[in-house]
Amino acid sequence: MLRKKVCLVGYGSTEYSRKSDRPLLSYYAEAMQNAMAQTGLTKKEIHGFSMVTQASPDYSPYVAEQLGLELDWVLNGDCGGAGAVCAIRRAADAIEAGYLDVAFIVAGNAFDKNVAHQRVLEYQRANYVDVYGYGGPNTLFALVQRRHMEEYGTTLEQIGKIAVSQRFNAGPNPQALLRTPMTIEDYLNSRLISDPIRLFDCVMPCSGGECVVVASEERAKQITDKPIYLVTDAEKIGFQASNMLPDKTVTGMSVVGEHLFSEMSRDNIDLLAIYDDYPIAVMMQLEDLGYCAKGQGGPFVDDHDLTFAGDFPVNTGGGEISVGQAGLAGGMLHVVEALRQLRGEAGDRQVSAAQTALVTGIGWLSYARNLNTTAALILERRS
Amino acid sequence: MAGKSLPAVNSIDREFWEGAAKGELRLQKCRACGKMQFFPRIACTDCLGGDLEWVPVSGKGKVHTFSLCRVPRNRAFMDEVPIYVAEVELEEGVRMVTRIVGDDRDQVTLGAPVTVTFMETEDPDIKLPVFELVA
Ligand SMILES: [Zn+2]
Image (cartoon, rainbow over all chains, first blue to last red; front, side, top):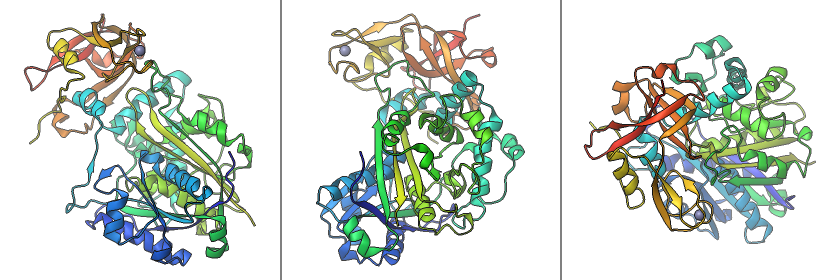
């Protein structure tokens, strides 16, 4: 479905750090302050608020009380790495229905020892996976990647090209924690973590925060001269959930892509912000979105330049594997990068004449499958 | 120091762990529609029916995928790395996350036939179903 009158009107980012012991709430507050400064919105004008979180006690009403927010609409974003995209979708629904005009969507992470931010380890992971000594998502993605490599002949060089291109993209991004150039040899020689996943496949946990502001078209025109329109969006949750012999190399993004590209041709997209906890996840999403046939992600990557200056720009700010993953702000980061590009605020990594962007989110690794949550949206600058 | 991870046995999966302790691999089967499933759940993933029975299965299957885990999430497992974490497809049409064990585990390939065995843990009442290559 096409969205009618929903815009993204601004964003706020914080610095990222691997060492900071700043409290988590301070990242939320700073990201919101930066978004308020960019949009000129005052606290009283924030009528809707969503925390994208998997950690107790950071639920939306609790954070709202901490930050002194009076609200007409709250939402707990609960789809993991797809949570940012899903929260934007829910806010858009409320805006279209007339219940909401401006919502701040916030996520972040901190190594904050003062508050017990407890992530829920779902019981199937605890009872039937962790007992074997698995390596968390590194192992779960390794199980997927080996299938992809064996079934389709995908090579480490092809998967590594995604990591190398994204590191190049991070070069001009001051927010990125990993900016030094990386070669394919660096990638191939990096330490094995859970074969065939190696160090430079793995996203780096860090502290930081992100905020995105969603508004009705009417309010958007008052707030900014650069409103970015939400064109269309879709999600698939629980793909293959009842199949005991699931195809590990196909994700719910295959369904999401069908919805999105029934509204706009995939060839009209100028840049892609693809959730990248691992390069293999990027490759599988490109396949599932229909940019190439299933299993042809390797040759597709060979044939295209994925850098911000290339013919097929992917993760133009370096993605999570270069910037760092500040918890569920990892999903927000992709939205914010798309906004920077479409608003012409991406500095030395600006994609020229960028008018449309695709943003994806993926999350909640499911037992013996791949992604439990997949969601995506298309954004467009309209003059 | 915390030990190696153990299952928190609950009312849903008690029969699975009791079977494993006796050297028997069991799967849930829906009495209404016949669906077999793993991991253990409160209801059938096809019909949502709650009338599930535990049935012993062959323990025979083949390797669907595997990874050599060198950095376990729970560092108490470090003395065992690399750990051959795998997904095994059972003859009954259900996949399990498990481990490949045995002196020849470095010979594992996708599609290799395997058979179940049961591994001792730090809890004398808990044994883990793991798999070894069929010679
Ligand atoms: Zn049933």
